[in-house]
Amino acid sequence: MDLQELREQINEIDRELVDLYLRRMDTARAIGAWKRENGKQVYDPARERQLLDRVAEQAGEENETGVRALFSFLMSQSRTRQLLDEKQQSAVGETIRQSLARTPQLFPEKAAVACQGTDGAYSQQACERIFRHPEITYFKTFSDVFEAIESSRCRYGILPIENSLAGSVNSVYDLMAQHRFHIVRSARIKIDHTLLALPGTREEDIREVWSHEQAIHQCSNYLSRHQEWQVNACTNTAAAARMVAESGRKDVAAISSVHCADLYGLKCVDAGIQNNSNNHTRFICISRDAEIYPGADRTSLMLSLPNRPGELYRILGLFNAQGINLTKLESRPMPGRDFEFMFCFDLESSVYSPSFYRLMDTLEVSVEEFTWLGSYTELA
Image (cartoon, rainbow, N blue to C red; front, side):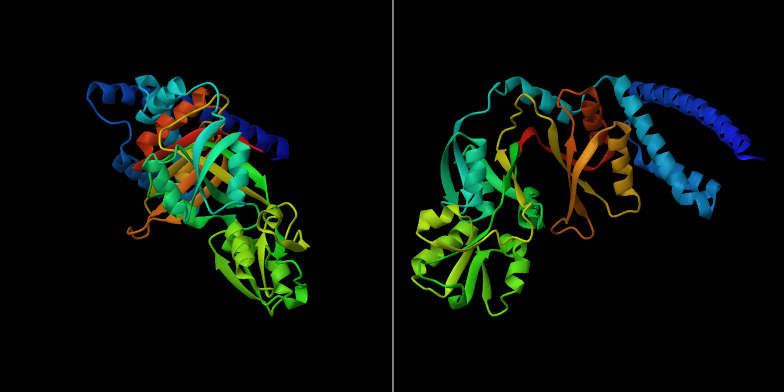
């Protein structure tokens, strides 16, 4: 056969596959109707495992992986069809709709906001980017910020979640699994690190450098050229600048923002010392209660999945089935649970999109634990 004849064979097979797909969806709808009449849940994990084992055995060892992937997608489509026929929105979908209805049309310009660190911290810059007139209370740790929100001491909190050079802030991700909160906005802040010291300090005088561990990592190339320096991590970059100012020592310096030079009476020894000039940190703004402001087109979710082959692939298929783009996927081990992981997803979709609600409905019946963290707008 020549290539054209082979392609005609493929076309004929594809036509048969489409017909079979439509037949399968019709049968799935009938099964969904039976489940509703008999009070059965849409998602039947035992049945799905049996089906996957059966088709894998039919396909043989060489094609087992591909067939499992194909039928995992088909089953996710069947579940979605059955849920749509039920015309029942999930608890998460109902929460999102209620949040939209009760949230004011305008994001507040003034509010009590919790930030980790001290005056001059990058968290302060993010806070002032999100709020026009914030009333900032500083806390020592990220955990303190979460607790200030849960206790209603502050209405909002600002937390760094990822950096374009150093990656995710793992300590914040770990805390996300332990606290009750909702993301209401996010912002990306340009980070320009500067080496600050007391006036009169020369670069050759420096013996110690203080900064936050993320900033130290972001300036690793610069620091590697000064092997004689002792590098010490502290709570944040602004705290490092303040410590240098209060120390009275001319053999120490801080990696911090240029804003802290004026704030603490320091001088710039060297500027732009980060590994890459395209250095941004993403901050989230959290609240205790869910708030969704107009224009929200980003959503954050948290799922826990068992450590079994194909589990993550199965979930990713649900996003693909609704044509929704993932912009972030972060995994962290769950404390106290052997070989189980928490997965944090960021997705792009208007909060008013029907496909968004279909995804929420499908996820709720497809995983054991599912948390909606918030739908919001990100400020660039």
